[in-house]
Length: 86
Image (cartoon, rainbow, N blue to C red; front, side):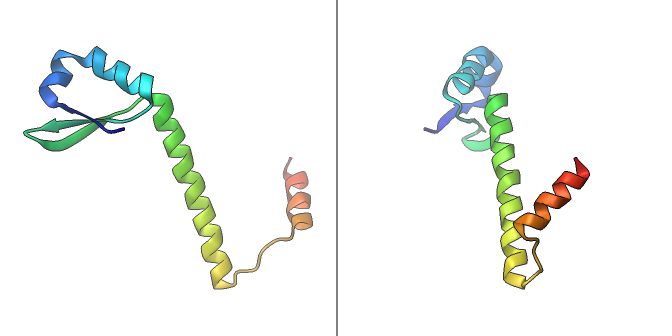
C-alpha cells in the first residue's frame, strides 16, 4: 500500500509517520505542494531493500558475463578457491 503525506504533516506529526513506516514496512511518500519530495522508510525495510538491490545486481552481472561467453568456474573450482581463501 502507498502512503502519501504532506510535508507539513511530517513537521507536525513525525512520530505517527515514523510509526506508520515501522509498523507497515512500507515507504511513506512526503509531498510538497502535491509533488513527491522525500520518502520516509523503516530502517530495517531500507536495509532489506538495499540487500535485494545488491543481490539483483550480482545476478545481473553474472547473466551479462554468461551472455558474453565469459569463462566461468566449475563448482569444484569455486569450492577449491573458497577453501584456499578461508
